[in-house]
Length: 146
Ligand code: DQA
Image (cartoon, rainbow, N blue to C red; front, side, top):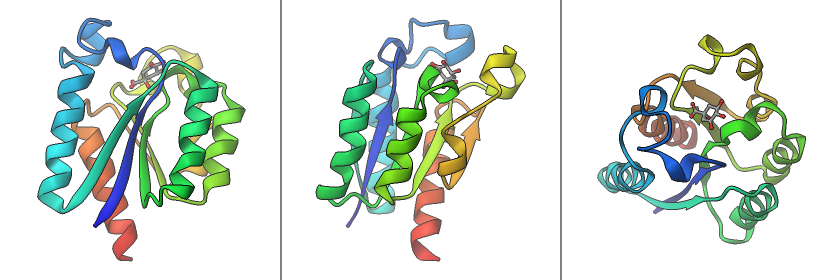
């Protein structure tokens, strides 16, 4: 069975109450439950993890190697725009990573338009809310088939 890590970065623990007009009213727990259920339908095991700390997220990405993950669905939050350390971690693991954003980062403040992580991901999905996470899982499945 394919095994995927659903990774969420800083401030995403506050989903539901954090700027709901931008990020929606679902909590992280309900979003995770939905993606896990979607994975089950597709025969994929989805493990979920969130942290507000750069180093913890780097360690988690490294761990995907020894825990034999097949892919990562990753919303790096604000790290997207400046963390070369997380970009290097994604590049280092040699496992397909799909970057996801709830909001359309290109349609917001100019500093959000740039992702330093996207160039080392196999795809970037933005502006589709929680549906984007499921689409990311589909991208990983298609990538595994090809
Ligand atoms: C986000 C977009 C980022 O710019 C922001 O810092 C976030 C969430 C999104 O899901 O739309 O924390 O990654």
